[in-house]
Image (cartoon, rainbow, N blue to C red; front, top):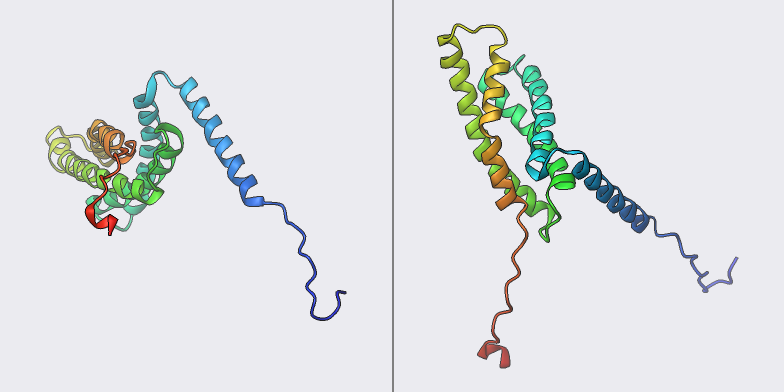
Length: 183
């Protein structure tokens, strides 16, 4: 024991956080390389691949939600589940890193997905309530209508995320010094 009044030196602990952070970055870089090398062509194909996985999850969520909610409400719940899944994978694997914070990207992603939600819900409802009954299609009408809605918002979503959600932050030239700065 150290004499009274003296502090014992604290041993330096290994920096686990920086180790974890470096391993995470390495994993993300390797994942991007694997995804880019195995996808048919470019960023849009990667976006569509993640969209297909997100659509599968969304269909499962809509089926579960549809047990207790009306069709349109279950499409909204499913869209939110798919959106969270899609944001995480698109941010990690498809779109290059930006200088924006995660929260800024998430806010922008949410705005684009609100537009996408309007398209998906409108198209799904139109197919479910008008088109499929007019064609006398009753088997899997909820799935068909939901897929039509998801398909209708694919290109607008990609363009919105590419040019808004995950757009590189513009570097602006420094403002000229003002007269007040001298005072």
